[in-house]
Length: 461
Image 1 (cartoon, rainbow, N blue to C red):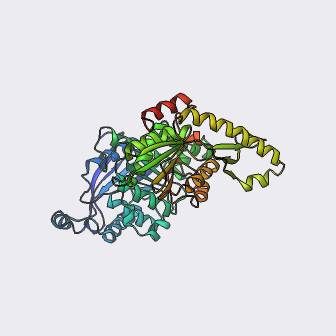
Image 2 (cartoon, helix red, strand yellow):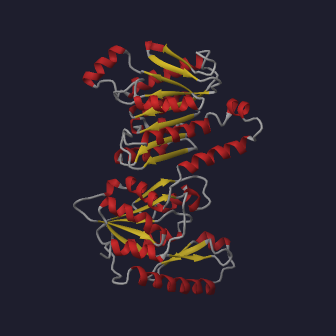
Image 3 (cartoon, helix red, strand yellow):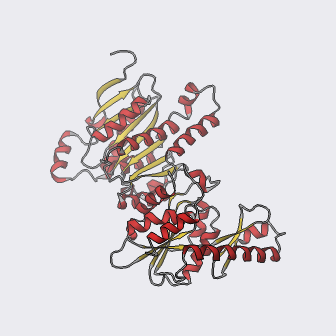
């Protein structure tokens, strides 16, 4: 074995649990794997992720949480694989073993959990508080108590396949309960639960390794030794930007495909669903959602009422029927805005609404809303003004239920919108939010022609 090769050895941890430990030269972090139901250290998928981490200089320990006798019983009866109490206790024992072993005790610790193993990793993280970063793949965090999720403080990334609709819903609910300040849900488009499709495990490994690189190598002793010439905040920002870029939405259509996966449970073969896109960008996002849900697609044209001091800022929004939502806190903070200005702005925006409706929906002003499930979609929500105006107008039409959906919305705005709809569905709800376009790789202006082409193909055909 040369100096450059990683140290690899079979280990026997607490309770006679077997594992495979790999420590690259100069490693400053280690990731402990918690395998899913019926799986173990020979999982080809976890071995692949481990190899990618090793190539990044991160040590790994793949360990069986069941002893040989238990594995034989579990193969026949499936008695142990969902015994979360047993699994987290074993995972805790292995964590403590790593913390005491001379080779690993000084390394920053991360967890990688799959399926039911994700719950074991999360519970252990809540109890010990030793993990500095957590990633789960196709995880079952719903198997962990909500109280345990509340106690997880380590930066946590959930990775889920875009076609794994039930698991997406479970992970979204668990993400809301997590006590971690840094937490994300990454949905891999067109991937199933096991990520067996070509290139999907590679994407899982890449995103996971970026998360661990950011939170295990981007802080603490490892950071100071390797990046002494870079300020801590500067390096962290750089690493986070690299990660965020890689899970940005490619464009509006790709964002719509991801959001469609989140909304899959609203597909109803017996009752029609209406997906309404807010023009312009929201229509591009709504198109693939309507296709996946086999739903009717329509277009709505609320218009932002602009601040006289900065046209990018909204003081409210107006609908085509003249109904208005005014953002009272904004108006109070900008107390010099006159009623005359607001009336002039309303008239100007109504003219533009009428022009767009004439172009987009020349044949009808009727909407299929009454007694239906309506999903109101935009390409992102900044202040929430246009979304609130649109939601309130839809409510007047007596839908069965109203779902507000967007690829991204800031957390504070999501809280405001909860009063306007039966459910809020977003892929990302970051604490730090400047503009919708920061979450897209491509965010070009949408033309009237693009909307007309969708309208001709979908709801006007």
